[in-house]
Image: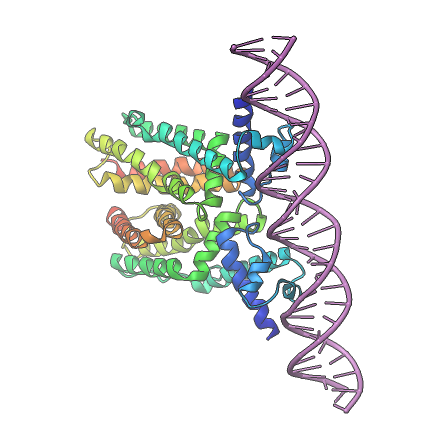
Amino acid sequence: MANDTKERILALALDQFSQNGYDGTNIRELMASLGLVKSAMYRHFGSKKEIWNALLDQMIAYYGARFGSPEHLLPVPDSPEGLVALTMGMVDFTIHDEKVVKTRKLLSIEQFRDDRARDLATKHFLTGLRDMFTPLFQGMMDKGLLRRDDPAMLAFAYTAPISALIHLCDREPEKTEEAIQRIEAFSRHFIATYKA
Amino acid sequence: MANDTKERILALALDQFSQNGYDGTNIRELMASLGLVKSAMYRHFGSKKEIWNALLDQMIAYYGARFGSPEHLLPVPDSPEGLVALTMGMVDFTIHDEKVVKTRKLLSIEQFRDDRARDLATKHFLTGLRDMFTPLFQGMMDKGLLRRDDPAMLAFAYTAPISALIHLCDREPEKTEEAIQRIEAFSRHFIATYKA
DNA sequence: TTGACATGTGACCGTTCGTTCTCTATAATA
DNA sequence: TATTATAGAGAACGAACGGTCACATGTCAA
């Protein structure tokens, strides 16, 4: 039960921090939505800042486990349509998984005030997707599905626009459908442009 | 002198809000860095929130004046190298102009909590650049500098990666030089890909 | 010269914040 | 059964916050 409360505090902290920022979140409300009184928090964390640090530990560990390990290499598609399918699957996950959405929002808000949030933001927003797609494009070139080119440049040119539309979904969820269609259209346009 | 103080409060508010967010900014410090006491603020604004609203008014007006009016259409380059030069000039401005940098930071921080900040963020981060470059690419196609294609799609594919690197500069200023080089490399790669 | 207005000061207000403390209830352990 | 560790309740703390008010100062017009 003890660890359970601690986990629930962390989950709610991600929720609140991603909505109101660190400063805009107060532990009274946070604990109240757990049905507890604010002083109960101090049985599990030494301070508000300690919640923040634990949350970042968790986010960094989650990112490393999910995207950092080499066994999570993306499968190289066997056709152009396979790239579209793979892309749309990833986009669907990253747009609808609440924890991931909240993580991106939190990083957007706090990226300028915390060094670890800054580093993680660059991974989430720029280098992460690019580094995942670089070997994938290399593989597609080797298979003769894409013309020979700099795979890292292609990965950057491919993932950055998609990332921009994912941000749009975070910011304006009512535009999610439109964004998904734009991503698919972009993916197809990209393939048509770079096909062998 | 009165209006001067009001303008200086707004300038400092942009500074503080973009660094610490709205909640993380307190008027005592803000006015102290003007050499004034916090109650002096209430001679110029009715509340802290009123500063925020005035600041957003100013940001929206500035954006409209600079990018919204049709007479600010980008000139269509006469050569591929002209596109690179135009791009790098714009990038150089937007990365080094303090007011613009602070505006982007502020929008990153507050985009989820204020409707007007949300709208302005989408313009700054996504649609603004794209809509500026769409007629430019149309013009380059008409001149035979680029192959015929959907100019809006090209503008999106061109500006989104550049925007991502501009965000990197905001987040990690020590990587500014690297980012500028990456933007130039991307611009050249883009032209090579889409040249007629 | 006088009176109105604009600007800034400093004391003060109520509220909310994070944090600490003492006390209680419960469940596992010896 | 007696003991001890755990988890929460609730009162209270000092500090910081946004905001108000009476007052002083300077400027400019009547």
